[in-house]
Image (tube, rainbow, N blue to C red; front, side, top):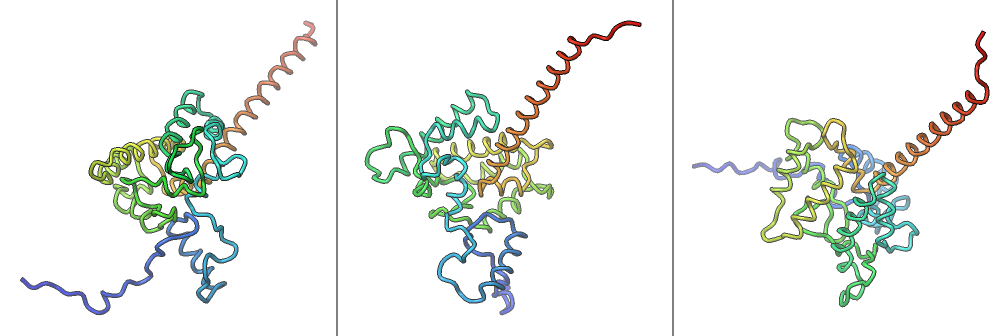
Length: 255
């Protein structure tokens, strides 16, 4: 049997994707950003170019939860953040409990005794990375664009532009590592929380929405949407209340 060896032209990888990125862009956005950076920084620059954040993407991912920006996330910070999404007290409490029980110890600076308050230290959050996931975050908390694109290339059945529940179940099953029970559970809970947060009307988690979960921007977006809905509800209630009072004070006189 003749084995076809690659030609010299096939051995070259054209336009290889960057291994890591200081943000969480989609493929098209990443190509645009690279072209801009190459035009502005034509030479190899040591470190991250000016204008880009020096935070790890995994730190950007949780920036919303660090309410006072002291690089420490308390359980009450997580609870308050969940409540700002409009989640119930019970769901917010459960989310805070699971997150801090699972992530706190691995981020503690001394790694000897657990933190008595179950705080999460943002600067060491990369230590809390678990297995059986998409590997979009590497072991240093950096974003890997190709792994993010691979999720949809492999599991977006039918080219919907996103993932539905069936796709997510197949993804979760395929990503499981041997005896990694913590990783299996963490991965499942993360995607359940993502689905609850996005709550797509058509049941499909769009790629762009999932990308905003990685860079943390969706948390600010959902909190702002909930705040506006609450403000509109209060405004409508007050308007109806004042209109009713005005009608009662000035009843129409029958002719």
